[in-house]
Length: 83
Image (cartoon, rainbow, N blue to C red; front, side, top):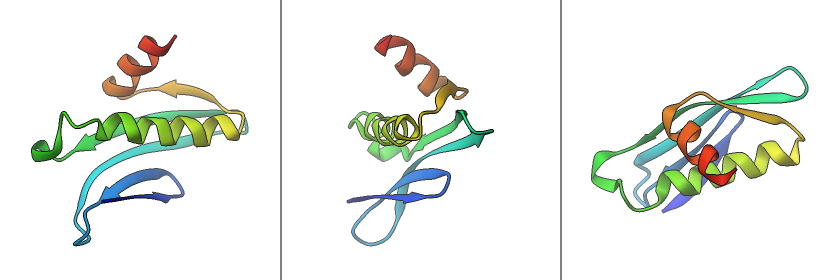
């Protein structure tokens, strides 16, 4: 499995190239970003994949000094637990 990044998302590919998970985000202005969407294929849930994607997104946005505004329910819940 391999985590990859596009300009507005992180995603996870199996060794055969099948995409099984993604988390998308949107940069808003110069100082903010939203986390919009999280998806993990049902057969791969409960393995920490979404948590890993969130860590990658948060690390990237924090390096850009952006305030993170979670929109998707997964990000809202997980980021509230970190506070």
